[in-house]
Figure 1 (spheres, helix red, strand yellow):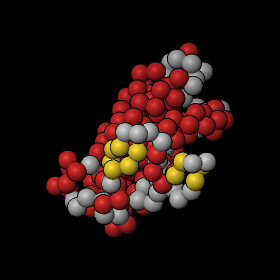
Figure 2 (spheres, rainbow, N blue to C red):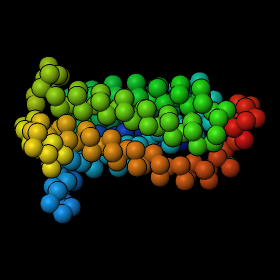
Figure 3 (cartoon, rainbow, N blue to C red):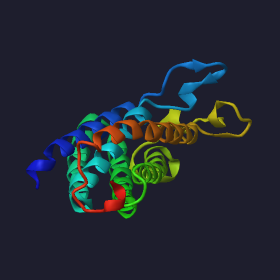
Length: 210
């Protein structure tokens, strides 16, 4: 079993390590009067792909194998992240990754017998919500400064989402923008999932999911 899931583990580690680096870089662009640097980091576009890896593993090998991929990917990703990113980012990423992915596995497994799109979509959306809340709080909130020094740019008060009068730390807008992108990516990932599911059989027998 372990040798068969090595590609999934490697993909997971690569995705999380890349996301840990990219989350530190805001999207420096303007959309009309909206400064995207107040709203998005590049990590928002890469991390959601991890849910596709988890869901395909879950579909083909079952929940137990998917948890192994999550745990192995977690260990490798944290080790890589401590080398490539700051310790605080690595801790935040590891904690959020582990809990979000385990939630994804549990939800997908529970819904696998329903319509083909429901399990990957709902598990990815709920997992993304867990990941966003945990990661941005641990990585940037002054309430978790014991994990490392605060990022001055991230905690600077700015108009929420760059357009509202209410001013909050910039990382709050990043979190909202990040989750919005994850929702869009979760919808887009249904396309490759719908194709790959034709070649990656569900080895756990649930006739209704065929």
